[in-house]
Length: 128
Ligand code: 9YT
Image 1 (cartoon, helix red, strand yellow):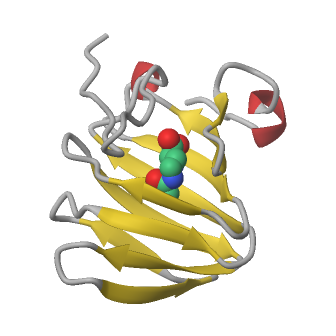
Image 2: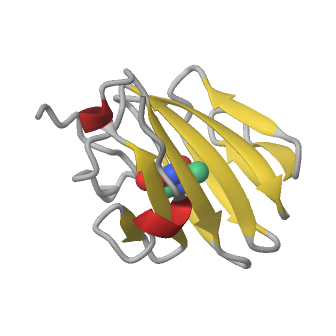
């Protein structure tokens, strides 16, 4: 087994600043788990358009508050510590941080770490 510590990820190429968010990718495709696990800070006052057409993602909020708007129905979902949302239909959405929000994110398939959001909020499917 392996143990990964957040303190060992910070400042490496597994810590990515996406502008509206900073994501510390704890486990990636290379770790062979079949999913990736990220500790992501969504910055207060930001709105991010996201649409993971190639991935399923579950996002568990452990600190802060904000909202997710699903664009197919314009429904606003309040998110606070203890809320998890699952993008089980590759849902196109807006993610808004009211405060800084700390999120534990799980991606299936795992991301490799090389993906960046394109203009549609999509991560490409990267094969290693
Ligand atoms: C919640 C969310 O999807 N934020 C975007 C960043 C993502 N967690 C990542 O790339 O690590």
